[in-house]
Length: 605
Image (tube, rainbow, N blue to C red; front, side):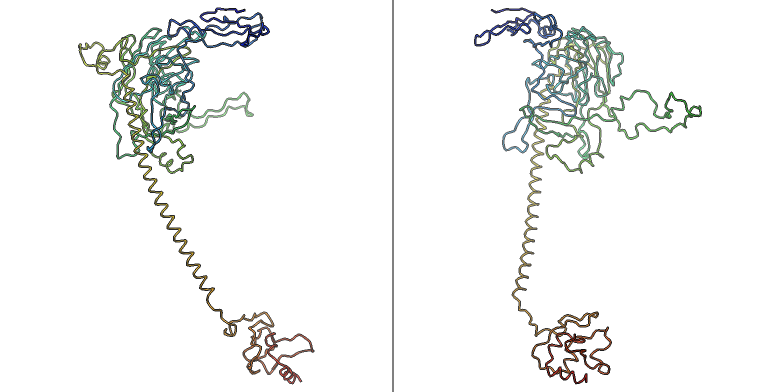
């Protein structure tokens, strides 16, 4: 038996049997509900409105205690908003851009590629993950507080205009039940502006508030224009002076173009991972508007316990004033730059002018120390880029609070086209613009192809730089190989000379003992009674006078009688037969025959 239950725009079919036709035991607690095809929606955002209804209206059960069980909901078909999970979304400190592989034979293997649709829209990567987008990248839906998104091409110079239609905002009730309602903020922001906050949060962005019509910068609202409500069309205009050229004689000029990026594999797709530009301390100091004086003396801490003496502690002398920003760098501005807004074709005047320069602040001292450090990660190590990588500038910045919804219109056809010369209207609102005047501004849809051409031009510079680096490294490798070969040759020559000397020593004749000098033997020790001198030949015709006078061992200076004092002891004596001899070495004894010993005993008698 088949049971059909209709709830809203979705039909739920209860199937009591499985795929094989076998009956299942009925489960009254959780009936099996399968969604069927929903009818086509008539509005662009109607399917999402239907999906936000309370899920309790679609739950059918025979039990009464439904609130103790988890309630599961299935997203309905037809919603035009998506989360783009397969795309790498920028996170804190890093950003991502699509990358492609170059053909073989290139020195730099990766290049910049586009992502569909190839037009001016919200960037898939450069937005908060809580901002849902449509397939064309022009519709945005917010969730969970203030979340922001940037477009996919910056404005670096010139005059540009675009429109944003407010679908749901201005404090309208939230479809998800948020009591604060839905709000939006529109404006322009730089790369360093955070995405998990509204535009105008710090000095890196300038915003227009829908609730009161205030302009916001550094989180400080100022009266500006009329409030914005749902259905209004807000025109966003920005004018920037021509971009200055870098100084070729100054290697530390921040206007130089240089990219620092690493190609990685993210979710099966090659992407460039880039270290995001950090916020400077000078811009952070601008947010310190607490009003506390920096030269106030420190006060004693309040305590509920009474001191032993019962007297209050005395306040010390006032501390000298400390410089708050003695080493802060100046913040350059862009002269003749301005931002203006239009609401339903009505100009609200100049909101901001003399905007902060989007280039990085000069920092050559820290860069010199970092260049001396050896890279640990090689080509996979991120480096802080103090130069312009081609993505610096002012981006259209859209902030949504709760489930607010907007629709972008980058042109060229606008709902409320501005006058041909917006600068004249901003300077003199009562000025009359002649008909047929050439348009002095450009729709921002024309910015995307220009930006991609700039990126591909930087790819060619990267290829040329990689070629030079390859030639330089190849020359260094060849020089190092030549030095290594020279060291090896010198080492081999030294070893050959050493072997030749060893062979000469081995082939040279040895000197005989009979040819040695009488002084060649060991010298007698002055502390010994008998020294080991060189042995005389076994058979010698030397007279015994010569033996005792010269050929024997030298006398010890510690003896009382030597053989050279014949008056006291002309010859050495022997105490008893077999006793140890003194005064002569074994060499002298070996040279004496029996006749010599008899001659010695005659002297003793």
